[in-house]
Image 1 (cartoon, rainbow, N blue to C red):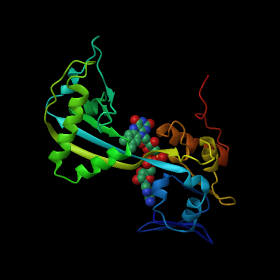
Image 2 (cartoon, rainbow, N blue to C red):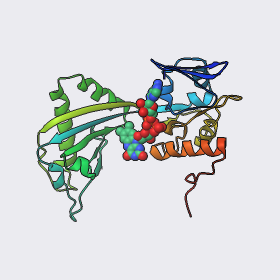
Image 3 (tube, rainbow, N blue to C red):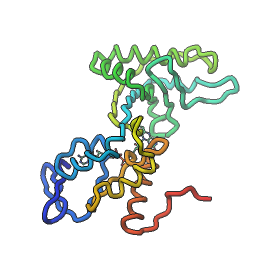
Image 4 (cartoon, protein in one colour):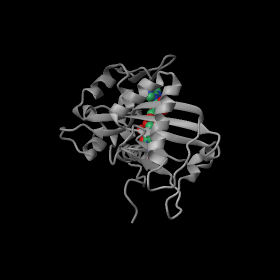
Length: 240
Ligand SMILES: Cc1cc2nc3c(=O)[nH]c(=O)nc-3n(C[C@H](O)[C@H](O)[C@H](O)COP(=O)(O)OP(=O)(O)OC[C@H]3O[C@@H](n4cnc5c(N)ncnc54)[C@H](O)[C@@H]3O)c2cc1C
């Protein structure tokens, strides 16, 4: 979607190949993506104070593949395996050891899961290459966390066979400091952000409770369907 405007036939949505009109419009784009869309309707939403209160959190992930799954040797003194580890002492920030079969059988591991801005800058710079420099920095972080931490059994970290860097400008959303909206205000506002218009926003970005994630995206949609169409869908409240 490139633009959203008002037209005599309803809301006019343009894509590179098509023009579509709709009388009811549900925009399932998180705020950063909506920020790229042209047209009067998109601009009016962006002009709202609620929209401007939303901050996308920049996140870096780096995934590596190894011939040997050295992380299976990370066990605590009482023999428990580890699937997550955090550090503030290095920009790897946090590590996720996959439990899911599709990933664990590939000997893949998320060696960086970072939401710190200064570290995001570091990884983005290293990702420009050569890749060996990025891999060296990852190895420093992994050794800092796992080689001899006094908590889990020391492991020898191997050499990766593949490294993939990825960055999201808005992995999840928070409310900007100093604004006067609550998470619930944003959740309610998104059902009809433009008074008098049949336009809604659904996404985790418009339901930044705890913060966001897929649960928030589902609930944002359920809330809209219940409010706009009286569908009475369950799922918004915790079951007793
Ligand atoms: C690294 C990472 C790990 C995560 N881990 C978890 C987890 O373990 N559990 C969990 O619950 N959640 C997790 N999340 C969060 C989860 O991915 C989001 O909460 C969820 O995807 C939000 O759904 P959404 O529909 O609001 O937005 P999205 O899933 O971002 O969907 C928006 C869609 O809009 C499309 N789009 C963008 N611009 C346009 C345009 N102009 N025109 C048309 N389409 C467009 C995008 O391509 C995208 O498909 C994670 C997120 C990240 C980044």
